[in-house]
Amino acid sequence: MQAGCHTIRHRLSTRGSFKLSCRWVMLVALVTLAGCAGLPKDYSRTTSYALTPDNNGRIAHVFSKEVEAHPGLSGLYPLEDGQDALAARRALIDTAEHSLDIQYYIWHQDATGMLLLDHILQAADRGVRVRLLLDDIGNIPKDETLLSIATHPNISIRIFNPTSTRAFYQLSLVLEFERINGRMHNKSMSADSQVTIIGGRNIGDEYFGNHEQLNFGDLDVLAVGAVVEQVEDSFDIFWNSKYSIPINVTAHREAKPNALKTIRPQLAMGVSKLEPEYRRRLDRSALNRIFKTGGWLPLDWGKAHVLYDEPNKVENGNHTARKLMPLLQPAIDSTKQELVIISSYFIPGKEGLAFIRKLRQKGVNVRVVTNSITSTDVFPAHANYVKYRVPLLREGVELYEIKSDGAVWSDRKMRKQRKKESGIGGSSRSSLHTKAFVFDRKRIFIGSLNLDPRSININTEIGLLIDNATLARNTVRQLDSKLMDNAYRLELKKIDGSDPNSDVRIEWVSRENGRTVRYRSEPNTNIFHRIAMWFVSLPAFESQF
Image (tube, rainbow, N blue to C red; front, side):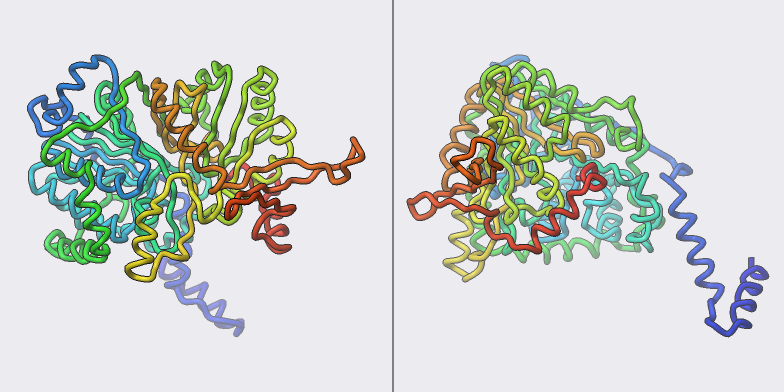
């Protein structure tokens, strides 16, 4: 190898154009080889499974009587407010006595992310077994942070479908694109195999109403009863799959000496960044009180089923993996009167458009709520949705786009309080992040699945299909109460009203300051937006969003 590098360097230097050291030749070779390396194989794996529920534990004390009164059913509580959603997660972690099984696509190393990591570490100190599974692309905490936490004897951390090299992470994303394009988009947190939270929220300030620029309107559901075992089964499948790699294997190194001792004050410092008022509201949450001291939580009871993709879906071209969408299809097919789709990213594609046409021909009213160009956080996804608006409206679909200052599920009270007390939050942008589908106001699906090509064909997803008319009706009622003020309603208008064959245009109808306003072009856009939307909506791009 040394002789070979010397020869290359000599030849380049003798030409006099530029010099290339042996170090850089070896670096390029290593990165190229890493790009072809695939998943690690030569390491010891430990298989583990969810623990058997303890019917005498603290969580059982809160829910056991109601669970016993509803055999075979699941108790469900929607988490609409971001701060309540964080309080519920913290309460699960603090109440756990035996196990925590946690699976997320994104985990930010910000105030709320550090808060939950800090409480997870405290749970491990109490003897709770923690299994934390994070996607590699969405995962934000540094390898050093995760390596340090994983040195705790009660904590295991695995990374889903990681890149082969960490030193040149960005380059590895390009070199390994085909292998790592499929991601684990799942979001779940289960405590003591008795209570779980599933929905659209990742872990980060913007998901819990604590971000100055962006706040996601989202929806989770807390569940107890029969469905929790199904969630744990799905977690075990992912945890024990070949795609889930221990953090020390992923990082190609072990933690530094005394890493656990070092990380504790770092987590505490991150938690200290939470505003005092935010922390007070978090502590005053009814969910926090119920888990700590007991009490009654108004649960909706019904049959619930976990629908999820198998982890090998992420293999490009794999047609054997069990997939979520075919499992959800019967619920869509059986819809007779109304289908409500709430999807932060909505790209129906030709097949989806044809299916919606069939529903309309059966007389099913279809309503779609998604982001506008100003509220979306993924511009290419919006650009690829745009070309389906006119076809959808022609089919009679009710189409709504959320405004940037009016998400249906958001933390409006907290944002107003922050603006009043500290002068911040006034320019905060809301974005719809919810993924929920309501069938005839009798059944509802809540989870991580968007109706777009990436969710349906590439990433893994999870959600609960729930048979409960109260929960389904209340979701639609809340939607109805806020849509007119917080969204644009799209309508088709003929350019020449006197000509029946005239081309059509879209108008955006909005209620502003108590009066109806119509926009003849997409609100808050310009020629540059339209050029950019045309480019990223080319067919070659659509399948990736």
